[in-house]
Image 1: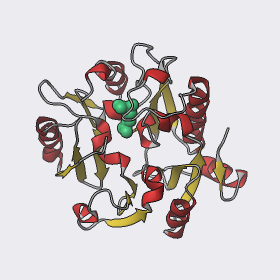
Image 2: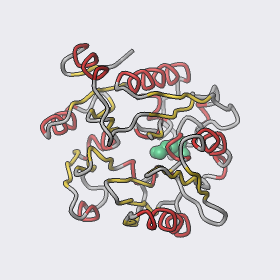
Image 3: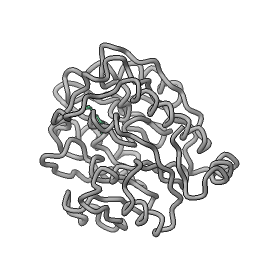
Image 4: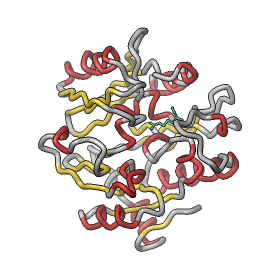
Length: 276
Ligand code: CIR
């Protein structure tokens, strides 16, 4: 397993022994990488083809990393008819005991959300996004009692409106963020903790986050702006030293995973799990 931390295995042991407090997530839902993963949707085809076997190894390392961080991980079987099905983040928007199940923006992905909803309904209440609304979970970023919703080519006005309908009554503010030439909002930013956002320089204005502290990722390392906070540790892609220094400098523990093949399919660290 490619799982590097500043202090090596002693940090892994400490993470396993970490006692979960009331605010922390306890479960993760993931889905295996399908054999058809090399046919996943990509915005621009990388010159190097996707190595599906390596992608599956990287996904297994991701699951093991989440387990090492104290999460109970349920891995759903892949469906070869959905090459993108491992990107479960897009299939549910979860907070405060409710999961809003998207109608995905990419027609070829519609249907991926059904087994996710079936599993989640054992744990949370389920709401649905209906035609003509479209929504991808990768456009929805929660921090505290606020949802930032990217208005991308995948998430239309009705989709963002559905987030408002479901979560505003639960006390959430909904802030829409217009996106251009960005697949999902979370391609350029992610939450480090309840007060701190990681943001790729030159992507969207930091002001959209209002009172939230913003930690900048240099444009050359924009891919690392999508990192995953799990109960105090930040899981980030390997190979982005300036971002790692910035995150550690802000006082967070960091763990790294090699995500080369996941990246080729336009996936990043948060895309592979739903945390509850
Ligand atoms: C797609 O284009 O839908 C997939 N190839 C990548 C989805 C990544 N998901 C995410 O960022 N939440």
